[in-house]
Image 1 (cartoon, rainbow, N blue to C red):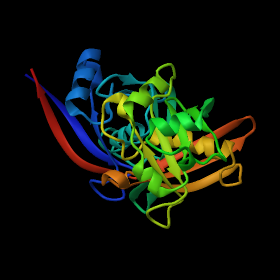
Image 2 (image 1 turned 180 degrees about the vertical axis):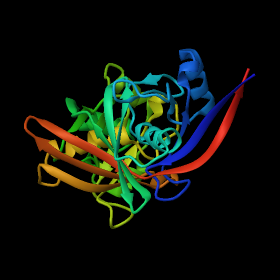
Image 3 (image 1 turned 90 degrees about the horizontal axis):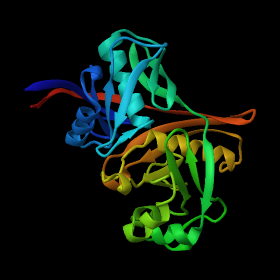
Image 4 (image 1 turned 120 degrees about the vertical axis):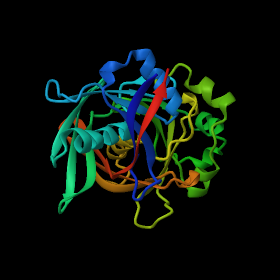
Length: 297
């Protein structure tokens, strides 16, 4: 029987058991691809990560990310949560920056400190790529909404910073709460699309200090709704700048997510136009929850 050491962290969490939980395994070079996939299925978080080696390569740490169903090239909260474990358990000293080697490429992660204590962790995502737009009536039907619930001033659009999402501007918080994926309408709509998950955002929030409320549905991946999604919010940050949602070519905002499922999360988004590209940074806090061992025959 083999025992696999792992760590549980809460990402984009202001306190323990908020945010999005993640399992991080070390010594990933000891697992086959099938073993990593099986472990991710057993852990049953939205993603599980594997640090392939404690030794950096080409200036970064090799990391692989698996959902219970498949390996993915990039995901936001696994990037921050894994960087936190590398800093805490492998490097074991304060650093301002480390790099993760992901399938999508190298992702820099930086660390802010308040005195001697780690505060916010930030990742620099790939510049967003903007895809097709979708019809308001089709998306409304797929989400159980009325077309008038969706803000026609801005497009429904596929956006990717490594993992694609469908960005959906919604007018009211009531509509965000009411939304549900209607599989019989949603799945045919995305069948031929790279983006498989919608991000709904609304300028009305539960907490007045926040700028946007966000909800992300991940029914396609057969996992529960995400309480905090760094990759999707990176796509949102680029979308907000491209379409001047706040009337500016730069943003520095607070985004709440997960309130509808009882796991309130906080994500910080910074984005601005730089020449012909849009730069995106996503930040938040990471909190250590537990260390465990998974026994498998």
